[in-house]
Structure formats: C-alpha cells, structure tokens
View 1 (cartoon, rainbow, N blue to C red):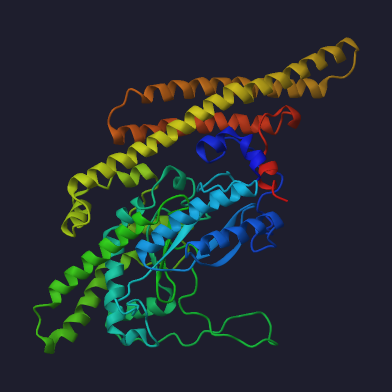
View 2 (view 1 turned 45 degrees about the vertical axis):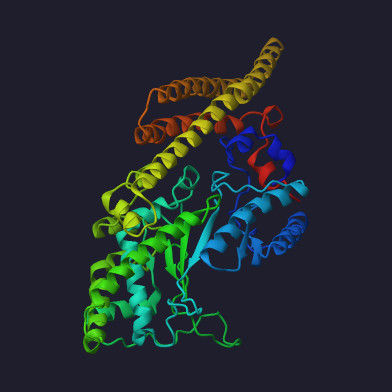
Length: 499
C-alpha cells in the first residue's frame, strides 16, 4: 500500500492490521485484481525486489496479483529445508526494505483488512535421498511402486497422529483471523490425495487390485482446441495438506511466520513413523519382507484413513464429518497451544532428539505469552484510537449537525434529515463510549492473571469480543459521519492507494 496512507493509520503501524474500517464501496467481488495487469509502481518494486533477491542467490518463478486489492504473490524456487527457511526470512525482510524505496509499505500480516482475503504461505514439502531421488515421486504406476507407498503411508500416519502439532506450527493471533474463513484451509487438518492415489489407498485397504482411473480429459469448453489429460491429483484448493504430483503442499502457514516450525514438526513426525516402520521390518527375514511391507502399508492405511478427505474443506458438512471421524478442530491458537505439552507430543520431540522437555515447555510458555501480548497491544491501540481520534471526530460532526439543526429550526425550515442523523449518531456515539469503557475495564483485569494459558484464554474469550464491540459501532459511524470529519484513511483509500 502507499506509504502516505500507512503513516496515517496508527493501527497499521502498531499492530500490522486495521482495527477499524468499514467495508469499501468495492472490495474483491469482481475478482478483477486476480492475475490482472500489475500496476507500474508495483511492477517497479517487483523488478528491484527480484534483483535484490538474485544478489543473495534467491530465485523466484512467478509474481502476480492475488485476489484482494493490493495483494500480490511471489513463488520462490524450492531448495533444501534449512536454506529455504533462511531464504524465506530474507524475502520478507527484503520485501519491506525495497517497498520503502518506492514509497510503499509491504504488509505481511495474515489479515490486515477485514472483508477481503488474508495472506498465507504454501509450504511445498517432500523427502529426497542424498543423491536427489524424490521419495514422494509416484512414477507411472504408483500402485506398484512399493517404495513410494511406504513413504506415503508414513506421511498419512504422521499427519493423523500429530494433527495438533501441525496446527500448532501455524498458530498465531494473526492467522486466527484467516484460517477457516473460506479463503484459507480450515483449522481441521486433513490430507487430500486426489482420485488416483485415493483409489489406490482404497484398494490397498480392501485388498482388491487397483483398476486405475484412466486418462481423464480436461473440459476446455470447445471442440476446436486439442484436449489435454487432466492431472489425476487435480488441485483441491480447500485442502490444508494436499498431494500435488510429487510433494505435499501444506497451506495453513501464516504470511508473517517462519516456515521453520512447520517443517520441524513435519520432519520430526514423519521421521518418527519411519523409524517405527524400520524397527518393525528389520527383524523379518528377507524372503518374507515384501509380504511384511505390504501388510505394513495396509495396516497403516486402514488405521489412519480418517485423515484423508478429498472433498470441500470449506463446507459445514465437513466440520460435522470430521468430528464423527474423531479429527481435531482446534479453532484458535489458544486451543492448539493447550495441546503442545501433551505427553505424546513431548515424547516425539524428546525421543528423536529434537527438543528437550524443558525446551518444549519454554516454547509453550513463549507462544502463549506472545499471543497475549499481541492481543493486548491491539486492545490498547483500539482504546487509544477510539478515544483520541474517532470519538472526538464524531462529536465534532455531531456538534455541526446540532448547530445546523438549531439554525434551521430558528428559520422555520424542515429538519427531518438533521434530526434523524443527529439521533442516530448520538445513539452510536453513546454505545461506542460505553464499549470503550468496557474494553478498558476488561484489559485492566487481564493484569491480575498469572498463568500463561489462563491469560491467553482470557484475551481470546473476553478481550477480543470487547474489541469487536468497539469496532462494530465505530465502523457504523464511519459510514454515517461525513468523510471530511473522519480521522483515518478509509479502506477504499488504502486498498486503492497505489495507482
């Protein structure tokens, strides 16, 4: 967004997101920004951004406009996990620095604007040998590719066993605004395999031969152009963890977070399962090993098939279905973090030498404390902005209305419009004032709490609803008060600030 409007929004400067803002006249309804022509200022930023990344050996495949106004995407070329993690951190820092040189500001918050899509990261993950062989490459006949099926089974089991840890890896106050909002995967972790792999898994479980799905033709809407085979994995954009050809795409990560946490948990969980597989197979005579591997794959798939879902993850029906399968629905960061120190989670880290028990508990405390601090800063900013900027502006407009009303009454002129407006604004202003006072009291009460989980839960259950109440009245006032009186740039001014 333009730097000038950013500097006029204290909420963006202090918290990274707008705490107030009525819906703009135009949002993303027309979907005309998505893959549209990149604006010259943004294009110039992207060009310099590319050059700065190249200097550091970081390469990107694509850059394009995303769905929301002023939203853009960049896709870096994959590499090994440690290097990719460092690259990703550098990309965030460099994006902000280069944006400033173009009088722009790069917002990395997961949900800077209410009512339009938020931002996230897609973590494309696979396993390879030291010689570069991709262990998640199905080959031309995946049903007969035992090596692939073993590693696929390991991933299925790991994701099912450690749903809570995967949810924790993407948990943050910012990401809570985005997950499950019909723009990002829900908080329920599941795996999408596609038609062919889904059919193979079903055949393994039932013990019947896999017939294959054949070459599906893509419907391109005309008989003139040649037909193309459809990818049997297809793309289920609603899935949080989707198999896409020869890798899994974990789509729940927030845009401002490091990718290290998610990959630590993925690597640890899958390594733990593979270690157990190896222990089961090692004592078996080589002549019987193929049979044992087949049984291992079948048992694993049968025990953990509940995690596989190829349907619409955005649907209400899936929430009910997931509950019936016994899958976790950790809707918020607080819900997720509460499971971090469960015995099975502590065990998987300590057993594999990733974290000690004290390191796990320290991370648990730090993440809860960070959540509470973020919400506390947002609450204080909400109070200050509402008291020092919004309410005074409303009262100034109300004063003008009352003076106009008195003048017109003295002249015996109709005052229907002024009376209705003054009454509405007076009612909303009083509600806003009461809600500000209520939020102040609730925030003050938080200081009396000492337990990290209890404090975080209090901010979730009490502070956030009180903040929302303040915003509701303020946003309604923004749509009622004359724009020249309003103290903050509107959503329309911000989202369409770059020409």
